[in-house]
Image (cartoon, rainbow, N blue to C red):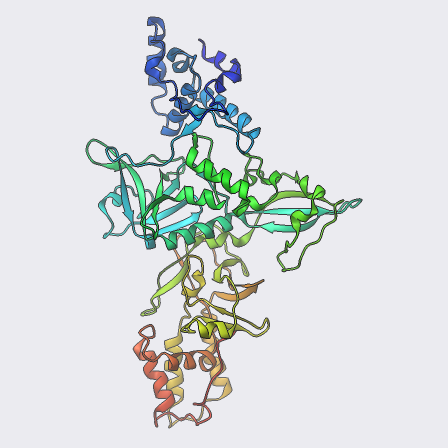
Length: 559
């Protein structure tokens, strides 16, 4: 059969082996060996085509295989004479048309079904990945930093410098670069106003990071060849395509993508076949309105994911018929939004600046003896002033709860203008702001000690201002409250760079914050011994010219 005739075939043939709705029997797809053999005339053409397209990627060849399995009445010569481009076009075209009309509980053609992640120990293995070395860019991709102490198998999988960039198989999570905005248009009005905005990509990323944080162990599933060498396929971006497994506190292994789909933060991916385990979890999340699926149904006309729509405007019909869809909805300012049954609603995808949260991570600080610090990955775009960087605390609290929890109060912060307390004493997968350090503190106290010698005049207000001004100028970020959260924002512009950038914060004044904090934690190894010795000298030494009042009680940490 000529290659060009493949595209004119009846598309219904693509669904010939669809499972029946009233039968749970699983029938294996038609295999090549069970089909008619090549005829002599076709074999020459088939060999020529195989040679011509021998350099195509694994993904292309997989699509050819899916197409072949879905057309049981085609003979191998018909498939071998079709160009890979034609095969991909037909396959994707048929799958999209079917999935667009697919209802929640509709069956999936058996030829599109993938069994789900499993471990074949003859040809696969799980490679242990230290949790601290894995960084997620979004809920379906990330990178693993490989160090000399890492397993040898990880060294053989490196893709970019000392990093293994990876993409989870058979799932697709919301993009972190965009938010979904729903706009309201009152009846008879020509104006649109933003009604609600959902940062779906960041929502999914935060859930994924928390799952990773809570896992006991993390593994990367790889292929093992007959020489016992490990490998995985790569995508067009050079990322390793692999399943990631998490071992939970119950000691069981879970496919990361399955857990994310069940929580409503990733979708089954149809381009290379449908992983039925991920798909079932996703459909359950849709039915129960979990995660991003709590949005109106029009936002998720599968497989047209909302982050594919970009600048298109789309109608949200059910909001007009049921304004209760928006009951309790709040905008970015925390105000409750009201709507009338006559209002029209539309949604579109827009860029937003929470994206930088996906590039923040904790690593050893450049400040000596400071422990971990907060960093931003190398970036190709400039981070502007007031851009959101990450969370410090996900919820506010009060002083009574902080005291009752046994908090060290090292990470407790009070915001006078909002009368809110925040505490990041307990680490989570997302409160990365707690790792930001303040530079120059030891140097500032060394200068204060020099100026406080009994042979010199007493420190003036101007002396304190000058010392703390130098401290403040070294900080490139600051705190801000957004509704009930304390977040870290850029205080200075951060140009694009190919090196990590450490984020520095001003925690508070030397007298109001640092001296009381250090006095309360003199036995804490987190503070350098030299710093504690200087504070003790300022408080107790006869060589210090401070008065009794200057050595008195100080204020709590605030900004």
